[in-house]
Length: 190
Image (tube, rainbow, N blue to C red; front, top):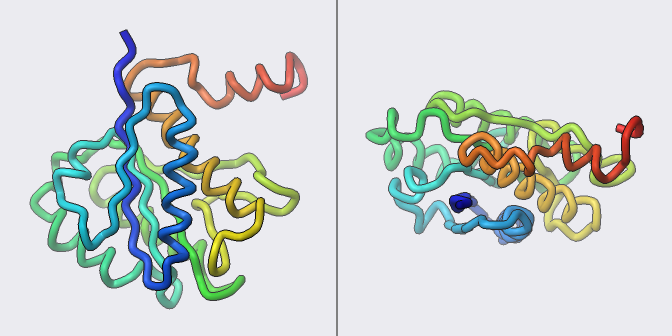
C-alpha cells in the first residue's frame, strides 16, 4: 500500500509575487500521485506544519540578497524548540526579487543555510526548464512569475520535492527522477 507524501510549501510574500510562486510549487508537488500539499504563509504557519511534512519548499522575497526578516524570525522563534524534530526531512528553496541580478539565488542559498542548520537534506535541480532557465539553488524569478520558463521552474521544483520524498521517505522507487528521465528519452538518450 502506498503511503501519502506530505509536502509543505512555506512562504513569505511582501507583494504577492512569492505567494504566486508558492502556488506553482504546490501545483508541481501535486502532480505526483498520493501527495498531500499544504500551502502556508509564514504569518499563518505553525511549527506543527513543519513537523507534519516529509518535504518542505521554503520561499521568500529577496531582501538585500537574503531571506526576509519574517522568514528568519519564523525559524528563530517558532521553530527553535523543534530543532531535533525535523532532522532528515527533505527541503528546497525559491525566491522572487525586484529584478534580475537582485540576489534571488543568494536568497535561496540563505534559505538553504537555514534549513541545513535544522538538519534538512536540501537539493537543487540540474535540468533546464527553459532555454536559459535552471534552478540549481532553487526556483527564482524577477517579480511575478509571468514567463512560461519561471512558471515551469516553480512547478519542476515542487514536482522534484515530491519525487524525492516519494523515493527517500516512502520507498517509491518508481518516482526516482533519473528513472523517469530515462523513460522519457529512451535508452542511451539520457
